[in-house]
Image: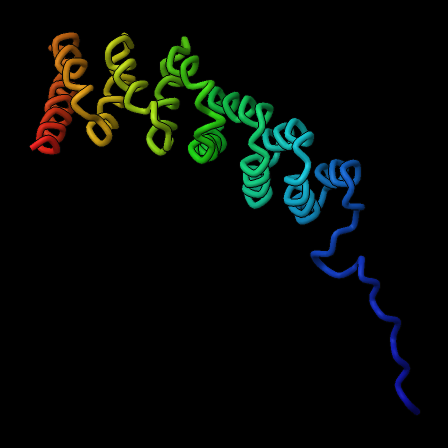
Length: 210
């Protein structure tokens, strides 16, 4: 007696296959599904919809599956609109260290979009946020990076913010930073690290000029 063939497995039952429609409404619904794989597919496909930035940001804050978080962050990087940038900046105020650091990394990849917000971030009332803003500057390929850093070491009252800025200025600073670095040394004359970092930056600038 011959074996009977079983019924073929429907395509929708194949592991990893999308279950929801791929239009905006279907993807937004899938973004909240219980299955992490479904959420991951949805986040990936939503990159094509700039209007989905707010929903992606909402999911990002509540998402506990790291692989889904990473895809959401990639989608937000691809969208890169004002909603996405503002939402990522809001992450700098969170206690979730992993999410905060991930947001910093995304912001580093969007120099032109982040630039209009940098002035307000560097003057935020929270010194930690100002430090995070300097961290963003570290990889922000933007022509105003040195200008912003000079402004920080010239005006910021918090020693840790200035220390973070002078470290970076030691890498990207030019002759334009020399006066500000000398003034920084005077302003924090009792801070050994500031003296060390400022001297190092000045030596590096002078070496580049030689």
